[in-house]
Image (tube, rainbow, N blue to C red; front, side, top):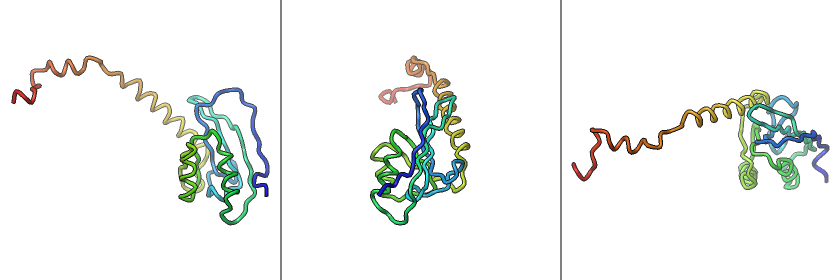
Length: 154
């Protein structure tokens, strides 16, 4: 049985720093359990750019058929994060084994909001890196301070 109904991929020549997937029924909100989602919406994310890369529509069938889950996992190739409202523990572990981190979010969380949050965190992380330029001589300066005593001298 075929579990993927159709797949839409954009032509994108850029290299994406990060690819993230969203379990969505409407292309705009995370509102699905990973195993039951009719669709995965996959975006490429860079520090200053977000682009829809791929949409995969699935047959929605009740139950826990391994082939159904395998088709969803295969659709996450090269993604680093999956956002969904729920996921089974065994599937969560399977995703970790292929390098995909599943994140549970409340139903109706907007995809746009999550993409903005990813970019905001990216910016904050770069800012923290840049402001953390430390003086390589800081330990030598600490040792020269008058209040500093070595344990052997006490």
